[in-house]
Length: 99
Image (cartoon, rainbow, N blue to C red; front, side):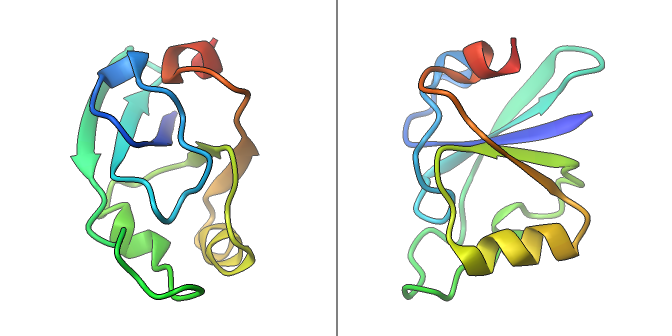
């Protein structure tokens, strides 16, 4: 399963999960089936309030789920409309949330 985590730092699985989807600098793209991951830059991080474009931000990653500390209603609806499940993160790193 391809699971995406928004972060503010580029530390791979040791990156703390960011508390807001839209303003994250990076996304850690994880593949739970084979433990692979990569980090991508969020090209939509500088958008007007309420104008988040989550599918643009995820750059065709074919995400199946997003794990985030917080997310606006518009972004949440857009992700769900595209079949992407959204889960609330616990405080900690990407690795801790995967576990």
